[in-house]
Length: 141
Image (tube, rainbow, N blue to C red; front, side):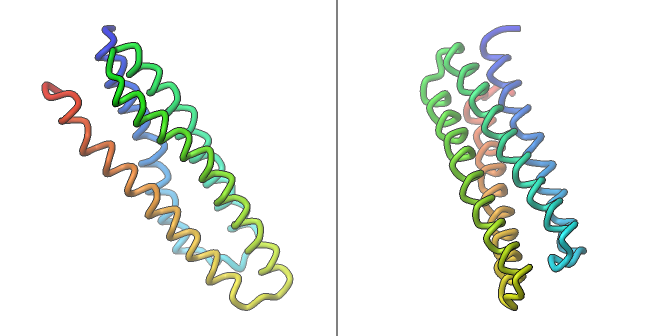
């Protein structure tokens, strides 16, 4: 496998957790966020998604660097760093609103839903950006 093929493979592999998150997160619209089991699953989904994007983004940055594509490597390194940062931010806020819900705050479920929507939007922007970049980065792909 050439360095360019490895870089393309890294981008495609990065799309898998994003696509999974996109599909799986939509199912939480069918569940009530008042249920502790549902919010525990939602938190696990966020945690796994951001961890996978962070790791795969870092590996993708390495693959791009080895293929001599410095701008792509920097972009994926930034994506990985954002995933690590966003993971902490989202989980911290999820935990805050889950505790508030459990303490009886009537607005906590609405805030959990907004956070859920924010995570979907965050993921959708990244997913669209990567998909749109593939033909530009790899014209023959």
